[in-house]
Image (spheres, rainbow, N blue to C red):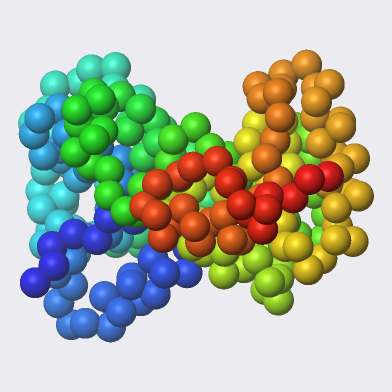
Length: 262
């Protein structure tokens, strides 16, 4: 059987469906963990303890084990206190706020993901080049230095990156780019819901040119932004996403149908 499910998107529909299926079983035998746990284990050359910061959903055995080795705030009984463990514990206290039963917070609520001390990208950035090559698969095509805005919202959001706004903005369900956005997320892309100054690629649909003027105005605004990191933003189509996935490598758009010139 499966012992671990590793997820990049703890609040995504696919992850939540897996958790729902696990809850229906009488004995939950599988842990759902963040990808940061895998990367941190590689960096440490040993499997890391399943701290609360890594757990999205705990199996029955993990719940029982945690009750014996740590308190309700994630502070381990047999582990010496150091700066890292104290920060981890205090963040867990901050997440709980009230005296909820232990079993109620093993599965982290969506709001807790906003306060995680680390995410899988931060952990992956600490890997050596050799380790990075070892963990790369067909599903890690877009994880390196790419920030993609998918134009499937009614407005472009703020120019300044905002975690709160990014979490609150919901893509339009009927958008023709919904499938492309899902494919990008499955292949480790950093997709955002605001067209802000850190964006490197804008994904548009060529069948909706009425959106191009609005995007063009925003890109002009971003070019003169004092914190802009990129001299130019590529405006691409779903054909580019499909081509990269098909070829197994993220490359610049090469064919006319993969690029839009504004």
